Amino acid sequence: MTADSSSSGSFSGFDLVAAGPGASREDAGAAPAPDSVAPGNPSVTALRERFPGAVFRNEICAGDEDVVYVDPARIAEILRWLREDPDQRYDHLADVTAVDYGGGRALEVVYQLWSIPNRAALRVKCELPPDRLEIESVTGIWAGADWLEREVYDLFGIAFGGHPNLRRILMPENYAEGHPLRKDFPLRGRFSRAEQTRRALTQDPEDYYVPGEIAERVPQVVEEAGAAAGEGEGAG
Image (cartoon, rainbow, N blue to C red; front, side):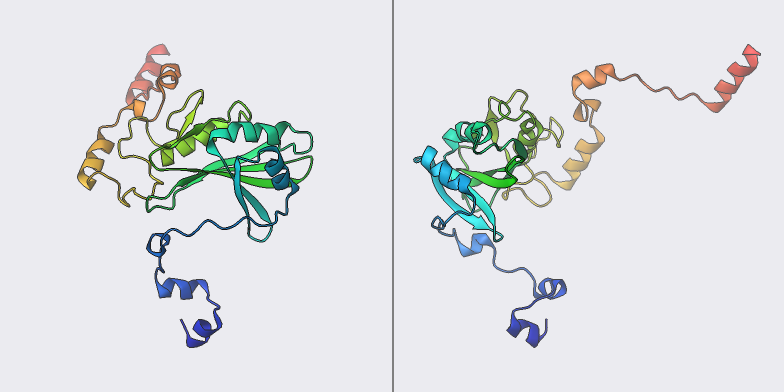
């Protein structure tokens, strides 16, 4: 990093790598919740009017992306209204994900919505305390939330009440090391390298397929070249 780049505040990607890691959010302590700002999306104002006690605050990210924080206990009610109200019509659920900032702070469940008729985007967030990681499923509103919620459950440990088939989707069903995207998850996992190797070498097909998939699979039999040739000669 040169003196010029340091004084000007302009850094390249290589400068940032050379500078090393900066202070983490854990080191800086929990940042105070920002005050609500004037929304750019009229849906935020409509949400405040329709659910006055359930909209906690809003903010604008990246210049023009409206984010609204709502009561987790009313998330299904709020999202259903955003989808079905004729003035809102957020008919597309683009993503469901989560964020863990560590340090014992609340985890965020994030819903990225898109209104195709209105060509408008809205991000809805709920904050869950680490000891109560459960929220209502929205699969009854968008069927596409099924696998998205399973991924959040698998990687963050957030349970979705009322989900029709809540189980892991990326990690094996018998994965015992926890939830890999949690900040308290060790970089190399919770087990020793020897134990991880032992488990990898003793895995069963059930680790990769659900029982129904295994029952439907037809075993592939590979014959030796000599045996196949002998059968061909006998038939001739």
